[in-house]
Length: 224
Image (tube, rainbow, N blue to C red; front, top):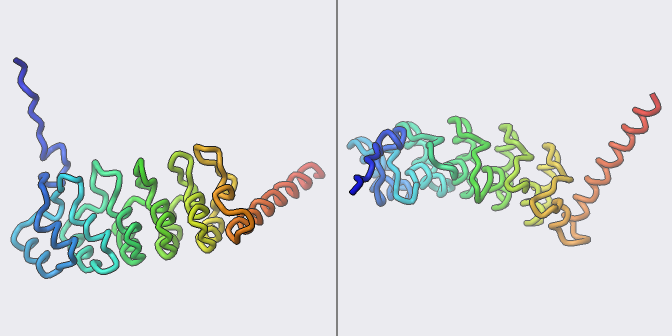
């Protein structure tokens, strides 16, 4: 009978520490108990320990970023990996899900990959738009996030149109969002709005404006 191959898990996890059910560090980070978290770290607990659901303590703290920013800072100060390998849904995704723009900015300042792509949720920008966290979107765009990054051809502008958030739509277009982008169903952002709604009128305006600019350029080019 053939023997099962042995796997070197510490090497495989690239410094993430060992895999566990759910550690005291995860619990402290998730519940915002900074004093307890500090003591655990001082006693030698790993800040990069990974739970069986592929979550690190930094993921836990970031999803609760509105109230747990102190825990996020503490974990980062003690070497928490801002871009843990093997994970597609990053701590930055969690911060965008939680909606704390200060946490999002902190993660970016620490080197978080803004184009980290999750097969289900897309980039952090997709997540921020889907959750309608305008300030998080502003932070991402000002930091240089790709406004036209696609998830199954779906852009952040598609998300903004689906949730009918006018300010998000205007902001994304201002940063170069493509109003003509089509998703895997062949639909433009406009087609996810209600006809006659403010969001629909806004996208129609931008489409017409761009078409006029292209037409004027074509006239100028051919009259040279």
